[in-house]
Structures are given as C-alpha cells and as structure tokens.
Length: 386
Image 1 (cartoon, rainbow, N blue to C red):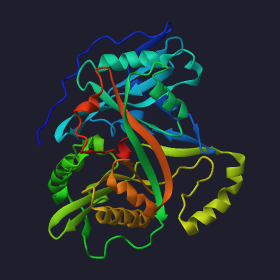
Image 2: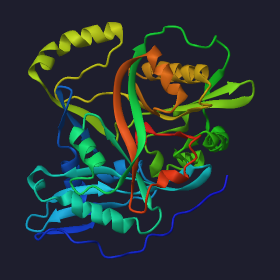
Image 3: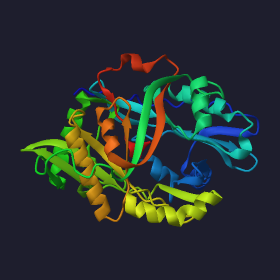
Image 4: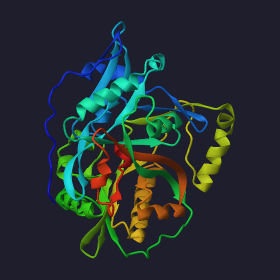
C-alpha cells in the first residue's frame, strides 16, 4: 500500500460571526459547556434520547479523529457556547492508498440561538478549514433527524455543497431469527487476540483495503501503547478467525460507556406504561431492553468487523461469536453499520434487533470527491467512530 499524509493546517484567522458572538477554535476550558450543548435530549421513536459525552467531550472526540479540529460560536455577553461542529481527520484507505480523511460530526446549535442562522457561519469556517487538505469531509445523518436530512439535500439553512454516497444501515442486534449458523461448526477457528497478534491484525486490515473504501488505517500496535484513538479497547476485546493457518476475519467488542453514553431521559406516556411488559417480552423473544427513565442503553459496538465481503458464512460466524462473548460479558446488544452496497448486509435478515437507516456523503467546496473513488470498492463505516 502507498500512503499519503495530511498537509499541516496553516493557521488562518477564523471567519466572522454575528454581532455579539465570536467564532473560534474549541479549547480545553470549553469542555463542560460543550457537554451541556451535546447532552440536550432529542426525540426519537417515542423516547427522549441524550447522546452524552461524559466525563469529557474531547475524550469522546479523540476516538473519532486522529487529528482533532473543532470550532465553536460563543455568546460574548455570557460566554455560553451556542454552536459547534467537529471536522477532524483520520487516516483511511481510499482506492488502496492510506490518506487523511475528514469527518464532519457533532453539529449542534443551542435552542436559544436557532434564529441566528449560525450554520451559515459554521459552513464558512468549514470552507476555511478545507482550503488545506483534506479538501472534503464525510458526514452521516440518520433518518430520525428529518430536519437535518432535508437541509442536507436541499442545500438550505446555510449547508455546504453535499455529494450523496448512499444509504447506511446500523443494526443493534439483540438475537437471531435463524438459530443455526450459516457455516458448519469447525469451519473456522476463532480465538481472542493477544499482544503478539497486533502486527498481523494491522496487516490484515490493510489487506481489506482491496475491498473497502474509507476503511481506517488501524495500527494495533498503537492500541497496545494506549493511544487515545483506541480509548476503551484492549487487544483482548478482539476475535480472530482463521481458515487453517490463515487469518481471514476480525472483529472487536467496544464498550464505550466510559466516554460516550446513550441515555433515555423520558418516554412518551404510553411507551413508559408499556415498558415493563415490553421488557418481559424482550427477554423471551430477543428485543432491546429499555432501561428506566434516566437509565443508559447498554450495548457493545463492533470494531473492525472485517472479512472478505462475499464470505457471508464467515461474516455470520463473526457476528455470532461477538454476540456470544458480549452476552458472557453481561451485554445483550451489539451494534454495527454497513453500507447498502455491502453484500454482508443481506445477512441482517437472519438477525433480530433495531435497524436505523441513514444517509452518508461528503461536503466539498471543490466538486464531487467521489468521482475519483474506485466504484468497485465498498464504502466502509465504523459504527463506533460516527
């Protein structure tokens, strides 16, 4: 594989903000105010969800980016942060080449500032950032965020030029419709990884770049060194699959609750009343457990769920092994994301759980970046880093 590196960002003055407000880079002292802005509950399917970043906003951002870039708009009179977004980058394989790829995330505007058209000012800041390579940024919006989807595709509300990449499906798996695996027992040998496997795991991920675009350039030796990009992961959280002596599959179980949480802050009345009965049914039939009001949803995120994209039996075996280990650890839900163009997506028909559809694409001020992408390669989305 060849490798490209990011150009060191040049320090340029940030753009303008409305009178009485300041647009600037996020700084460590902003952490508590950013968490307050991020933790505001949003409605979804009859519940109020808070996507929290406790105990540190920046610690949660560190797993999304290898190079963090965040901007805020602050109210001069109060010092309150009323808008923010992240646009950092990480090394990913694109057309088999390791290069920096931006990801636009955590766009938030405080309720009290939603008449100020602050997204326009953040868009200007994004354009300023992307004058330096990487010149485009990936973004993801899920279906339950209807306002963002409409704004994204219409270009209204000050949004930057957007180029569609297709649909994604995030499954929070809670059981199996098909009880028997697709592959006979013993076809693949599976075991937990050890420190001695780090180099082979890094090489295996690089080999998967022949099939996938946007695959992060994981360096598992850095995981052993405790790099923040791998916060919450240990080498023993990974399962290796072998066919004979050849490493053919990989998956990790990522418990992110130490830095990122999904909390149900409230239920619609009818859902709240039905919750105890639903949970009794879920225990028997394989549904997602709903915690009490104020409780956290517990799940493992699957990290680097990788095998040859047409080895569906191996994909199924990896999913079932990850599920078995997750249940052994007391968590009966695992979550992962696949592109609509990924052949492995068809295997979701064998599984029970909650499916969330979204769209992904790219912001760019220099034209459609995907015209240079190899269309034979499948878009890769890492659930725990979006």
